[in-house]
Length: 222
Ligand code: ADP
Image 1: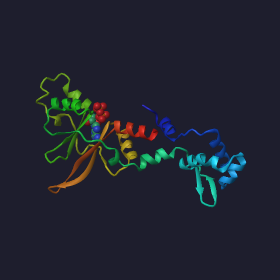
Image 2: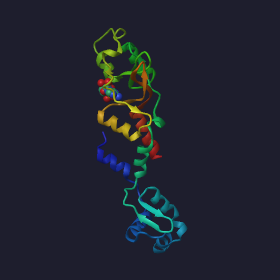
Image 3: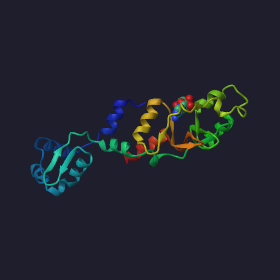
Image 4: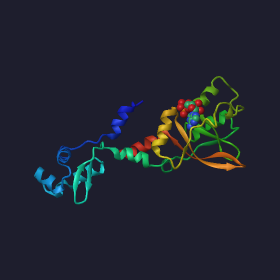
């Protein structure tokens, strides 16, 4: 597992070129300073600096005010990635949930892991609301040494509501990942609260898994 610090460091580091580093030092020492002035101190044309200045302002390391100039923000570079995971909502990245009905046999659940290519099943009741979660190890545990898997229902081993950790679609990806890590689990059902027959139930609208996190990470890297 990646340690918290190295992860944080990895997410917040951008490589600056020699010239970008020089610009940062100049701005740090002379805030606020115009682009023209930076260019003259570096003996280059203003236009030459444009790409570097955009990178430095986009990364949040430098701030820019019209008619005033550039100033050093003191923000760590790479906050773009951090901002992205806080602003991105679960609904944008969630996958289709893999659900089984309560009463499905352990045997059929194991088959579903293969056919649906997932590691976690969400167990739903008659009206489709969330009743439980069955992980691959939950299924393995009950499967060991038993030969009547077709007759054992999934409820025997699933983690039951209300002990299920969930996420809403409008919550941030940051929050979802925090829950996965804090509870040491692989998947969260993405849910919406509903009232059925006067009872509050959770409708499953998606799944947010460690694979989702890997895809987001890849996209941010690109
Ligand atoms: P595995 O058991 O295959 O390593 P997990 O780490 O996801 O997979 O699951 C560990 C335990 O936590 C299992 O008993 C499982 O039922 C339970 N679990 C998994 N996901 C959730 C969830 N979203 N909320 C509550 N419990 C969960």
